[in-house]
Length: 335
Image (cartoon, rainbow, N blue to C red; front, side, top):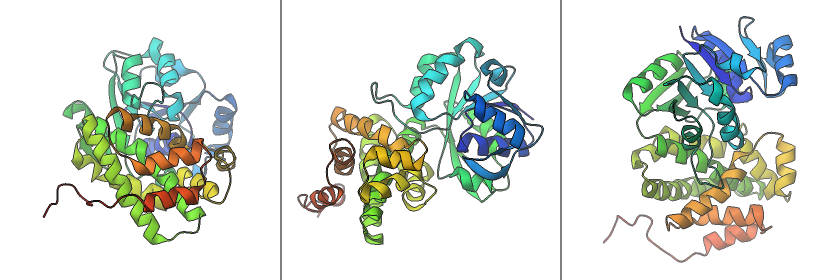
């Protein structure tokens, strides 16, 4: 049994907290939102983010960050990506040397173009930072539906420790040393999922979505490999696997926001209606900036930025993608 601190009580943090408790661990959940903590303490259920998933009486919910971190064997950082750095800063007084911090959010910092684990390491250099990622909607994990994820860590020892802590009858965990590849895939798939949602909102079909998924992972892979990630990660669970589920499922807030944009709503109207953090909106600019930095062509992500931030008509963006110059599907395949 491990003593685990879950920092962040959104849908994913809540689902993981209950799963880890059911795995036999001692679980404390921290949230910065006092009203959220009071609801969880009283109702033993996250009524808005994860309704229907009952939380054990033995689980502790607190708004005191020190209590959430004290004497914990490992910490799970489950706040939205835009709050990763600020939360890591707040954790600084309570972190122990070598303490494992598992980031489970997905995103890239717009100003610095740093991944989330890089931000955490910058703020908490004494921590052993790992990541957990893959096709894993909280709503399905909360219902104990079969799910597979990947733990990325710097050492095999840490990866195996976390693999053992998280795995159970319905949650299978693989391990990988490619933290960068895992994080780039997880962040940029949200941008492609926005595009898939927009296509749905425009009334396009399965052919369109298959094209977006396939060409989207091609864009992500080219960039990720140039940055130092491994191609194998992008063909695995944290690449194509996560992209498929985020583009296809109505659990996906990115797809739902995209559908609304395709139907004519503005980015802000779509985000307000979804009522959850739409990570792809925050990763879109960072993805485009990384494409420019590494001199990589990413036409889908370029068009999504124009739709989101330049009020481009989504149908016009699709037409531009369709009328790009002809080219090889794969530059490695030659006559």
